[in-house]
Every structure is written in structure tokens, then in C-alpha cells.
Length: 178
Image (tube, rainbow, N blue to C red; front, side, top):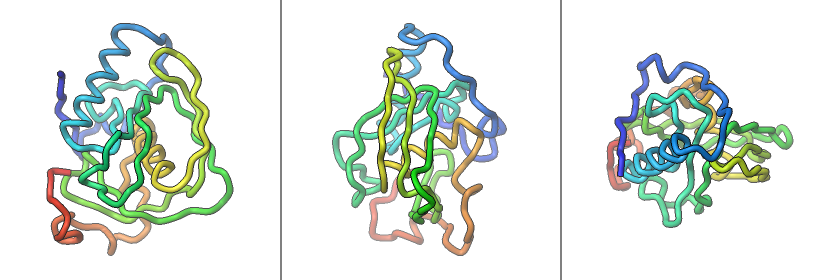
């Protein structure tokens, strides 16, 4: 099990655009995916992108088989490895929701996201993925893929009066290092 240090907001590596993966089903890509999954699990994350551990490749992992203690009321999202993603909004409808980020520890903010999206890409073996999703699942995908394009959720916020420390905003939830 390899758990990496997660880069924090302010590290310039989080602002870079990640490179597309050119070759699938390689030992290096499988190791990266395993490292991302181990790191995400250790931090109780809803997802993790390769740039968050300092790897400039378009690879994200997200989802879990059990409820996430950081988002106890959120529906389950299937465990997914998504490489070279493309996101297409389906309609103009946005919804706002609270987000946290392992690269912005201890804080939460309200972020507008497309309510319904189609995402396409590949798994680590190079098999195509093509899903239409909405709600929390769509939010997680958009959040993680933003990391591939140098975006952190505070950059998408419109109202900083709804941004603050998790322990203050949600005192009844278990507190962890977001």
C-alpha cells in the first residue's frame, strides 16, 4: 500500500494542466491507479486526481462501496478509474452544493456545478467509459476532473459568505483532516 502526500492549495503543481495518457494497461499506469486508490482511501476521500499527488496525467479515481464519513448523506458513487476524461453538460441547469477537497483541508464551500452531465474516457486497461449521471455523482466527477485542468473548487465559488472551516460550518459531523 502506497499512500502519497496530497498537495495542498498554494502548491503551483495543482494549477498545471495534466497531460493525456498515451498508453494504457501498463505497469506504471496500474501502479498510479493503485497509489491513487490507496491515498484516497487513507484520507476518506470521495475522489482523487493524479495532480493531487504530483503526477501530471489525466487520471482520476472516485467512488466507494460504503458511505463516506466526510459526506454521510451522499448517495454511493460507483468506484471508477477515469482516464483522459471529457465532460459534456446536459442542459443548462446547475445546482449548488457543499464541497470539500483533500487539497483544501479543513474547509468547505458552496460550489455551482452542472446538475446532469455525460462523461467519457477510459479505464486503466483502455476500455471506453461513457456514462450519463446527475446529482452527487456528477458533482464528484466535475470536481475531480477540475484538478486535471488546474482548478480547485474555491475558484468556482460565487459567494464566499458560504465558505469556511468544516468544524464551524458542520460541528455535528465527524471532523477529519479534509
